[in-house]
Image (cartoon, rainbow over all chains, first blue to last red; front, side, top):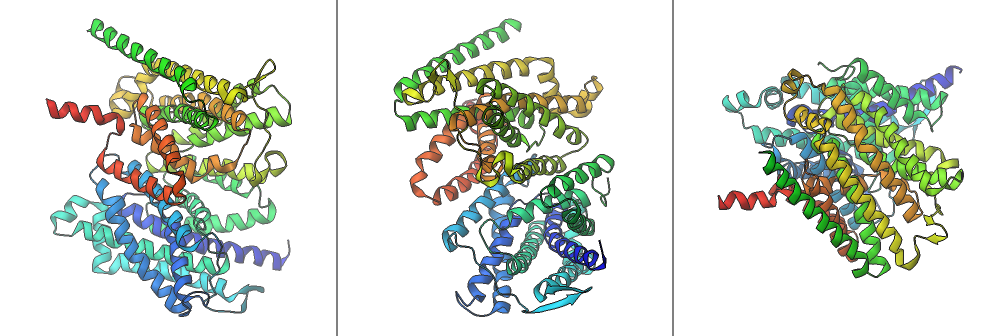
Length: 291
Length: 320
C-alpha cells in the first residue's frame, strides 16, 4: 500500500464519515430530545433530494440547484412538523413509546417511499452538483461536490452544536431532553420544542439527501442503505450525544474505507457488525456514550 | 381456584378444537388455487407472528431480528435441498436448527443491552444476514434469489397437486403444532419467568430469576418454529428471495403482532389472517395499497393501544 493508496482510502473514509455524521446527528438529536429512533429519517433524506430535483433540475422546473436546495430544506422543515404531530405526538404519554414509534416511523417510511414512487415514478434521477468540476485533495482527484460534502457536513454539525449549546431555543431543547417535567414547570413550551428539534433533524436529513443525490442517484429507496449505516454509527458512537454520534460516524467511515480496501466490499458489512458487537460488549452505551 | 382455572383452560381447549375444525374445513370451502395460496400465506405468517410475540410480547424484548430467523430458514432449507440434495422435509427441520443457532448468536449481545439499543442491534443483525446473502451470489443467487427450490412430496404425491390441497393441510398442521407448543411454553416455568422479568425485572431478580438467562432463552425459543416456517414457505413458494429481510416484510409481520396485541398468543394469529386477506383485497389499488396499510397501521395504534385482542376488554369495561 503506497502513499497515494493511503490517501485515497483516507479521502473515501472521510467522505463516508461526513455523510454518516450528517445522518447520525439528526437521528441523535431526535433520540436525545424525544426519546424516539426515527426510522423515517432515510425517507426524509430521499424526499429532500426529490424536492431539490423538482425545483432545481433542468428536467423539471429548472430554477437552479441553490433555489432547489433552499426549497427542499423548507419543505422538509414543514414535513418534519407535520410528521411529528401526526405520527409521534399521539404516543408521548404511552409507556412503550420507543417501541410504538419504531412501528409508526417504519410505517411513515413506507408511506413516504411509496408516495415518492407514485409522485416521481420508478425511473432514477440525478441531481446536478452545486459545484461542478474536480479538485485535488491529498493528491487524490475528487469531484468538487465531494469536497463540498467534506466541508459542509462538519460545518453544519458544528453550527447545530453551537446552536444547541448557546442559543435560547437550543438550550431549552437540551433542558427538555434532560428533564421534561421540570422544563415544563419552568414555563417552557415542550411540544413546540419537540417540534423544533424534529423539524431541524428533518432539515439535516434533506441536506444529506441533496448532497448524496448529486454523487449517487435519487430513487425512492435511496435512504435505506444510509439509514442502515446510520444505525451502526448510532450504536457504535452511542446515541446519547450528537458529538459522540459524529465521532462514531467518522470512525465507521474510515473503518469501512480501510476494510473495503483490505477485506473487500462483500465482507465489509459483516466486519462492521462484528466491530459493533465487540464495542457493545465492552461499552453497552456506545464508544462515546455515557452509561 | 384450581377448579376455576381448569374450567377456563378446558373452555380454551374446546374453543381451540373448534377453530381447528373450522380451519380443516376451509380448504374444502376455498377451492381455488389463489384462495388457498392466501390461506397458506396467512397460516405461515400466523406461525411467524405468534413466535415473534414470544420475545417481543411475552419477554418484552424489542427483538427485530425475528424476520432474519425466518429468512435464514428460507435460505438454509433452499440451499440444503436444492444444492446439497437433501430431502426437503429434513432440510426444513435443519432450517429450524440453523435459525435457533442464529438466535443464540444474536441473543449474546442483546442480553447485555436495554431498550433502543436492542432494537438497533437486532435490526442491524437482519441487515447483516441480508448483506451476506447478497454477497454470496454463487450459493444464494444474490439479488436474483433462488428459484426451483424442491417442492414437498409424500411418496410420489406432489403437495402442489389438487390446487395445493396438501400444502393447506401441512400449513394447518404447522400452526396447530405451534399453538400447542407455544401454549405449553407459556405455561412452563420459563414462560412465567419471561412475563415476570418483563413486568418487574428487579422483583423477578429478587425471586431468583436471571433476566439475562430468561431473555436468552426467550429469543432462542422463538426461533425453531420460525425457521421451520421459513423452510416450509421456501419449499411451498419454491423461491428464496432477499425480500424477506426487507423493511416491507418486517413491518407487515410487525403490524400483525402489534395489531393483534403483544403478549397475547391468539391476537397475532388472528391479525395474520386479517392483514393478509385485507392486504390482498387492496392489491388492485397498486401502490396506494401501501399508503392505506401504513396509514391504517398508525391509526389503529392511536385508537387501539392493546391491539385487536383488546377489543373484548373495551366492551367489558363499558358494561361494568
